[in-house]
Length: 289
Image 1 (cartoon, rainbow, N blue to C red):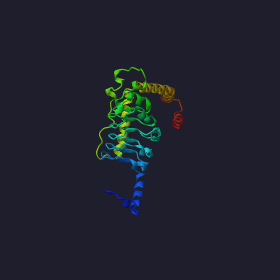
Image 2 (image 1 turned 120 degrees about the horizontal axis):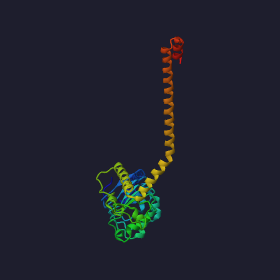
Image 3 (image 1 turned 90 degrees about the horizontal axis):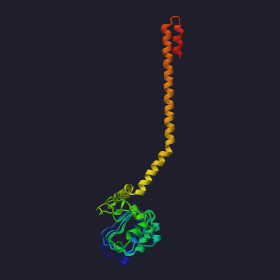
């Protein structure tokens, strides 16, 4: 790693050019980058990180995130605590097809219309924008929830059915901001976390959000009941057929045993109570059978 000021003569040197090319080539394979609290002002060097999946650039001085457009494999993007005031257009977000977790809290977003650009993000599940000026605006949560259709959690709370279905008044358990819907899915960063740790954390966050929704969404609960009923109904004929088949087999086996036992009883009765019977022949025939 180079320290100090890099002069024009040094950067134009042949060996430096070769070194720079190698760095760019290596960046294509980067899947995890974490630069938190380093007073960074630009993300230009990320343009070549086409394999990047987890990007953490929190607590810096970033103002422009457009260089991330080439990072189409991003799953988690953490940019909280920066100075971003405006989001890129829908073309940028539609290209991030795998992005599921997006942390943008503690930035300078002030316009609802601008943050609605996130509606083009096709897989976004969890989003944070608290401690931004826009979060103080009336209808902020309602607009985001009903603009980003894939969104399941916003600012520490899983989205309730009451927020999605207009004029639907639910019991306290299912209401917006109920304690059952609370989930801090953006805890403080752990020092020294690895790529594997981040991937496991992503899986945990998504599974936890789904679990909370499964137990606190009336729509999902009813859907689960209906699916169970339809499955049982479709399989009932199969179960009845198997039950009938087992009953038939049991009856057949019982009948065979009964007939066989009755034949043996008759044989021994003839053997002991009818002396004139041809005992040798009967024994031979019984043994043969």
